[in-house]
Amino acid sequence: METYYSIAKSQIRHNLWQPVLISAVMLAASPLVLGIRNLSPEQSAKVLETFVALIGIILFVPVFYPEQDQSVRDTIRARYTPITCIYLIRLALSLLAAAIFLLAYMGVMKAGNCGMEMGRFYFGTCAEMLFFGGIGIFAYGVSDNLIIGYMAPMVYYAAAIGAGAKYMKWFYPFGMLTDYMTKYWILAAGIVLGAAGIWMRNIKKN
Amino acid sequence: MWSLWKKECKQTAKSLIYWLYVICLVLFYVSQMGGMRGRMMTAPKEGQEDYRTYGKKDTASEAEIMDYGLSRLVTGYYLETFDTYPVGYVKEVNISEKEKEEIGEMLADMTGEQPDTLDKKLEEYMMLPWGTEEEASWVPAMRDGYSYEKFLKNMGRVCEILGPGSEFTEAKLKYSARTPVDYEGAKKAYENLVTKDGYTGGYLRLFSDYMGILMGILPAFLITSRILRDRRAKMQDLIFTRKTSSAVIVTARCLAGICMAILPVIAISVMPMIDCILFAKGTGIRLDYLAFLKYDLGWLLPPVMAVTALGMLVTELSETPLAILVQVIWWFASLQMGINGMSGGDYGWNLIPRHNSVVNYGGFANGFGQLVKNRLLYAALAVVLTAATIGIYEAKRKGHFRRRGNILFNRKKSDQA
Image (cartoon, rainbow over all chains, first blue to last red):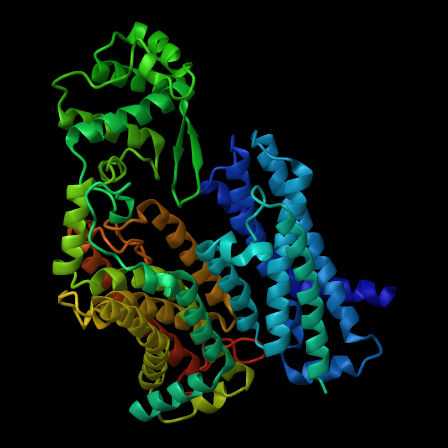
């Protein structure tokens, strides 16, 4: 347990603070350019789905970044603690940060009289964050290239804006008010892709 | 210089990210314009159901603009809140009592009503069920003879009150007040497409609209990955010790990044050309066979240059993927700001100008001057950013800006070194 605590502490101190800081600045600065008061459910969903969910990419994708250097990776793999365990701790911390940020943001929106069902919108946005994060982790795990990890979910995001639900069907990320079932699908896809990314990363060591 | 450029191009062509980039472009094209072949624009027929596919009128009359502006102002005044779109997202602006009073005086002046009776009449009108406005005893309308200049002066004051993103600027009112074309308008739009646009021009403009979205971000991934690859392979110090000047290294890399990014775009842009050629066969339409090059190089190349140059600068400076975040923010803001001018003509200074229509040649012609200025600005910006990158690269070679265990500052004077 002490090892896990120490891994988490080290992750926060050396790595996680950067994406957390960027996400915090991004969300805190958003009221300067987009309204988060008196929004209709449609407008609230748009803000959460097309803007807030982007922090999923910032928080989840750099999960393998501390071991980007092959020699560091080999050293960590030689240790007793499984590297998968380290990745899972990092992801849990990122998830916690994402969940807190989203809760705070939605709290501010709710206080600003925005029309939305808290539980439903919260789950839907969390699912989307995990989905974008999962795509990025998978792309990073397969390619061993952080830039590809960022690129994959951004391209998906752009494609979803351009193509819409007609082409994306179950995996359309912006279906909060049009087809809520998509949220369950993208959540499942995000988890599967994230797990596959970690698995691929581990396979590649051999 | 050119041998280095060739090497850089080869390196890029061998990378996985480049082929992912190409696949993205192809998939995006297929999903957005792939089904065009069976739905090419034909001449309108008199009496057809509607002419929406032929776009909106190029301009709105002063009366239409004033009526539209008044209707929007009345709604905001009644609700005491206005929707603005500073970066595409709605931002609600609540007006104070004093501002409401000021707008009320404007409305009274424009409608010819007494300020004290206006509110009451307005309330009755706004309480009517949707679609029954015609039954109203009073409808807000501009009073006869009200001058357009005075109206614009009022709208200018409203814009000052509401701040950025207001829908009451002259350009936005002119744009939004346009109505769909009738048969005559549709005929004119088609004629413009065939005669002035050489038919292919309209399709290549639509192609540029779609591809511009990707060109506003994807080249940043290519160049950032290329530079970070050197750092990861610990090649930087080796390159730094070479005789080749910083200007040559940076320029060759930048040019290679730009060329490799635009090359697949040029190749894909041949597809809509082929669609047009097949359609026009035997119709007598005189096609513009060079449209694809005009739009690829004139419309799409400048953002590729600017995005690549900025990506290089930020990556050289930070030695992290920060350039991606910077570009995502710029891209996101540009994309959102473009939403209000989707049908074209309203190009402004946006990195991603929109023209999501095969027609609307009139809008394109009206906004052409601004579009040229816009594209020149981004090309010039790319040159400035590349020059700055050369400076940073040179400084790094001399030991400045080094991080992560390397020399942070060159503390020795040159004569001591």
